[in-house]
Amino acid sequence: MEEFNKTFVTEFILLGITDLPQLKSILFITFLMFYLLSFVGNLSIVAVIIADHGLHTPMYMLLCNLSFLDFFYATTTVPKMLSGLLLEDKKISFQGCITQLHIFHFLGSTEAMLLSSMSYDRYVAICNPLRYQVLMAREVCFQLAFTSWLIGFLYSLFHTILTSRLPFCNMNEITHFYCDIKPLLKLACTDTHINESLVNIVTGSVALGSFILIIISYSFIATHLQNIHSKQGKSKAISTCTSHFTVVLLYYGTAFFTYLRPATKNSLEQERMTAILFTVITPALNPIIYTLRNKDVKRALRKLVLQSLLVKQIQYY
Ligand SMILES: *[C@@H]1O[C@H](CO)[C@@H](O)[C@H](O)[C@H]1NC(C)=O
Image 1 (tube, rainbow, N blue to C red):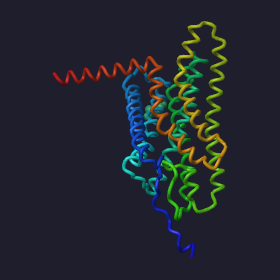
Image 2: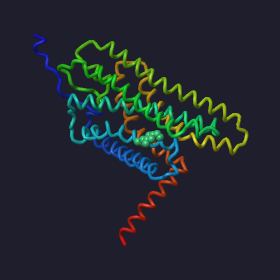
Image 3: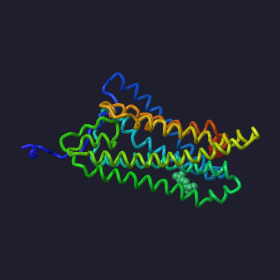
Image 4: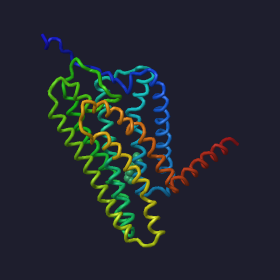
């Protein structure tokens, strides 16, 4: 009889962030602002770096990758969440859900790899400046970027295949605002202990691996800074890596805050809240951090704006 009643799920319901109607409009406006900010901020950085030949250096090409990624990262989850808040449009097809899960984890893990590549770039620039042209040649930089995207893609493919093969029947309400692995594992009508362990092990090793690479780069940088005696030299070296360091703190700070806590009964509920940090807030803050602390980006941005204004004027006459 029970078998007979089983229907396989063809679509999921994303329950979203909140059920409270009073909160919905406030959250909608707040998240819309953050989304617009990350939209404009990240695409401006991509445009500025592509347009300005002075910025075609490894550091800025990797930053260009990061902004390009952040734009899509926010776009994978936020518009769907906003339409859930405003229009009560909570349905997502099975394929849509799996696609969202894949892109979200693909971009999220690629970001970790890119941050590691960027820390290597900063290590070479500060500790080995004379060999920078060789060690961070165009091809090397391209390989670093390409490998980051490739590992991110394969890592995510692994999760996507494992999750999409689970049987889902009867229950289809996801207690989250996007399709993530753990909420889906909770819904599967089979024992998912092996999946859960695999997710923890694989995610943990990718996150830890890229984090350790960053720690190693920054320990070399820190040791090197102690040996620089001129104040000017020191502050110049520091100023070239503060933006990157801030972005790293933001990324790993929110990731550890979300995932490295004892699993309690409410942990899924809390994960949903803290997920707002890295889906909505971080992608909007990254371009601000890089623009505010960086003279070259500011200069190139001014140039680009002036140029486009000038073009408009010429067209006008
Ligand atoms: C990413 O970085 C690589 C390496 O420099 C560069 O060739 C590529 O154009 C960049 N892609 C994007 C989208 O920024």
